[in-house]
Amino acid sequence: QVQLVESGGGLVQPGGSLRLSCAASGSIFSIDTMGWYRQAPGKERELVARISSSHSTDYVDAVKGRFTISRDNAKNTVYLRMNSLKPEDTAVYYCNARVATVRSLYFNDYWGQGTQVTVSS
Image (cartoon, rainbow, N blue to C red; front, top):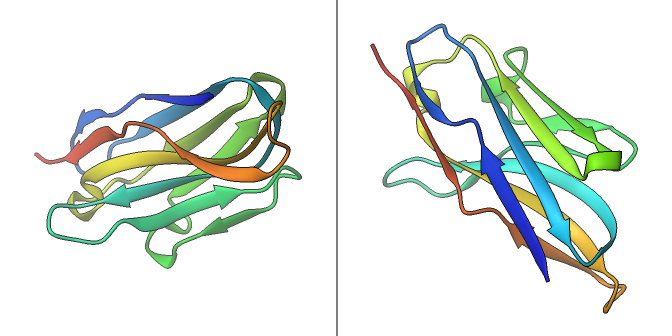
């Protein structure tokens, strides 16, 4: 089994910064893409950013230039640095990872429990 544990959410004023972290643990053989999604009240879950095992990145247009995704493969951890936060960034942020386990060498999607980010004055 694989667990994703997120941390770093909270309340921040507009223009402020936060860094989210997500550590994967368990019977991991290999991790492919890792990413962050978010879901605001009444809206669909959307991709925010993702990063491949070779560190190529992809961002939704709304966060380009403000958010930076990175990962530490040795620690099975992905980060999301969020700068110049806006009220519209308020959402529950979920970590996602495509993981092949020791038991099954096929890649499957795993999700964290979510962490709340609130941007408000």
